[in-house]
Length: 515
Image (tube, rainbow, N blue to C red):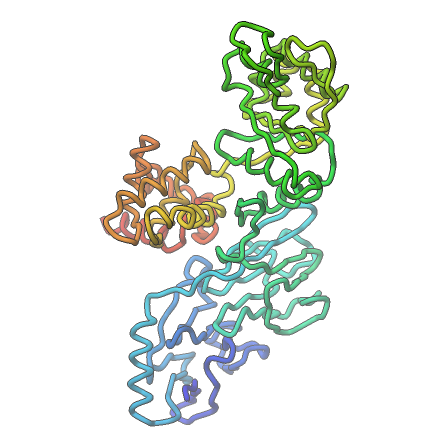
């Protein structure tokens, strides 16, 4: 069995079990291992057993260095103050056990555990999301915290989150107003998925963030707060019959949201019909929308039902509604008002029951104000609006979507996986073509990659082939340094803003310094 042993001037003072939970070391009485030495900080070290090895985090360091791990091999001691030593030892002296422990440790060093949880911080209507990696996260109102909370009821250094193999431990740091877990004030407690943490007037929720546990709706996956909120909007308005306008850049998934509205609502068993209003020759738009009778015009050899009739009882999705010709806008308005269509060459109206969902990448309000789109139709279509943000503003979704696209093409290209460096490049790119471009890049990389493991160079080549610019050119050293400066030296915050791994940011900056 492994223990931490504390020595004072060569005399053993105590033994502490490793592996059950993180161990805080320092002068503060709330620490697990208390050191009575003025040279030791109130919170000096955090000792964590992880995947067969033991690592130490120096909590007294500047926040830029706090997340740096120091591995503590067997029988190695850490000096604390003038007279104390902390040593990792095997209490059982069985050499076989010791060799096994050393072998496991060799394999474990340099590998990170997968990220399982994230924090959703809510304060005065603002929502922020933080991913929990391996290093501890200090929370408080002071700027030297990893998570800064602008709340007068939160102490400068309020509490600390300590990830370990036994779970996520929250430890109060002597706050005045307390740390509450699921409504109960605690000094320390294990947090699990769905747990509620409250400090001051700020609520923090613990949620799962592994790919398999992401929210899925109608085949769409997401991790970002923005998209999860949209999924909630879809569920909330799917039962209504009112028109919906979906706004967003090309490739963001507007048709996917439209299908989700259909499948989550009472019309799911009826038809979902989609038509690109800007992708048809002008002389065919009217026939596709409203249908025609036999002989209505040259070439009309038979009767044709328009998309309104085809979608009767179900949902009609009109994409790129901003491209609809002005004369068709007037007819569309009439159909919405009367719930009836008249085919070209027809003498009577045909009643239809359709949930209309429209989409556009254009600024429809500006078009209506400028006279390029009918205002009366605009106000008919905007009873409910769902706006999808571009992929570059929700980088948390990139990895989830990339793995989703990989699963979709397994049958054709076989199993593929993304390396950590590949994921870093994917999240660093700006994605002007949004999710559609990401899907194309993943497909191209799968075909070109020489092995099952898609590396950064495979992603870089695929993006260059499809987008025209390699990702490596989009993140210059100057851009990285500026991001760190913008976040007052906090590399973790800068990496989150850039959408890359903190280790990638650190390595790139260190390489630049070495050169």
